[in-house]
Length: 124
Image (cartoon, rainbow, N blue to C red):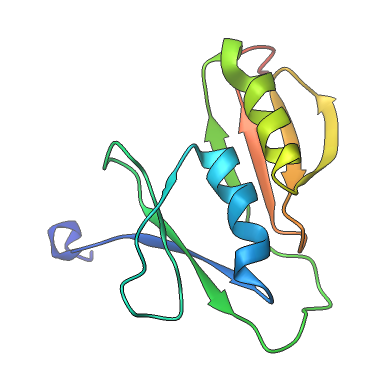
């Protein structure tokens, strides 16, 4: 088994054609803050509490034809979930499905990368 203590940092990378176009969505859905650029091409977003992994945006040269195979689940208290969904849509995202709300809403950024805003309510 790999030694988990050897992990020095964990980041989540989102492939994007236009990183600045998708960053507001991810900032809103995650509740993250934009970090100051460090000179790299990617501008990471950081958990302001310092507990969760950073998100950064890797430049793509061409769009992918296939659907992404992973997505991010963000679990929040039930009384803030709809505000989080509304903020993510206002930041350029769109609602993919609310068929399982209030258990979760499926959202996507402007390039189709998905995230679910989840609560403990109505879970099977």
